Amino acid sequence: MIIINVKDGESLDKALKRFKKKFEKTGVLRELRSRQAYEKKSITRRTEVKKAIYKQGLNIESV
Image 1 (cartoon, helix red, strand yellow):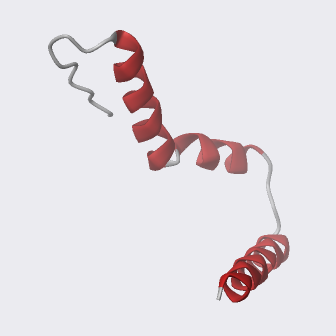
Image 2 (image 1 turned 90 degrees about the vertical axis):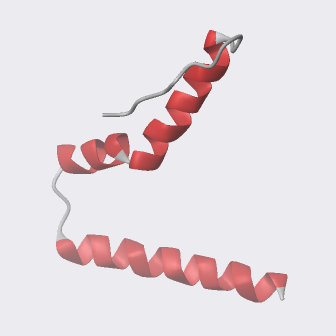
């Protein structure tokens, strides 16, 4: 359970924004969406490899 303490004089919008950031970091929605449709292990591995190749390409370009 995510707990957000609202500080004195803090607007509700800022507190809501902090809540949304914490909620995103937990990855609940991402996991829920991934569980909605079954994905074969070979496909998940393939996507992970593609992401790794993409990240490695970004690192090479920045150097």
